[in-house]
Length: 249
Ligand SMILES: [Zn+2]
Image 1 (cartoon, rainbow, N blue to C red):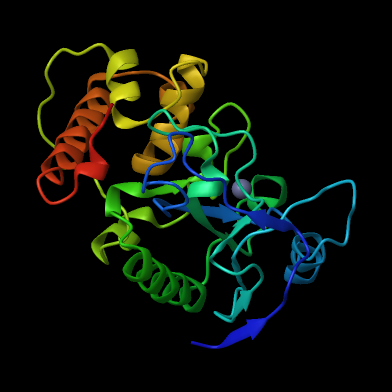
Image 2: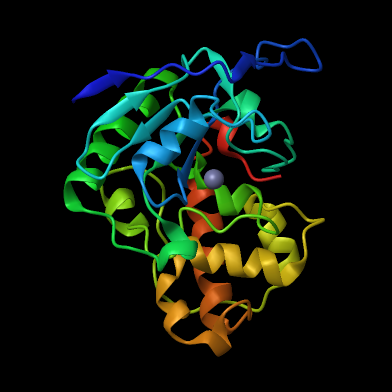
């Protein structure tokens, strides 16, 4: 992997567990982002602290050609998730590794992610997950942990391809049972205080990208959406015996 050091001053120590337990500072999540900038140069400028009014960073940035910039040490807390929530936890920055993927995103017409870039993302995610024992169900989109504010890495991001490589999980198709969508979204990990439509949209953006070609289905809990969500909750529960950490609340 072509790794380039591009250090940023935007980091601080990870917070300890509020109960003082061994879980404190443990890295649990891998959060994927798009940069949302037209160029990698502009993204790096921001991630390296070039705009004091916009203090952001990430542990890594992956450029379109597959080169990887190492920005913040994995031991440190990078500033990528902002106000966020998953499975009852709110300081996602303290518990995660953040990877920024160069892509213009929604503001620049949702460009495709080049193959070389996705291959590098897969290699990098694999290495990070192995180092910290991050479970596939804890590989999340920024839009999952901040559904009212964020849309990245967006519905064009190839989550299915990553899941096939062991990075993240992917729903099976089948028939769903009647379920309370609000409750089951919370069970999966989404913030129950976030607007329901935003949560459903975030879920579809990650796990049902095909919905975005049918705008009337976006944010709507149709039977297909409920079934896919149920399938994922089941998968997550299935990881419980070897991974108590993965237990939905
Ligand atoms: Zn982001």
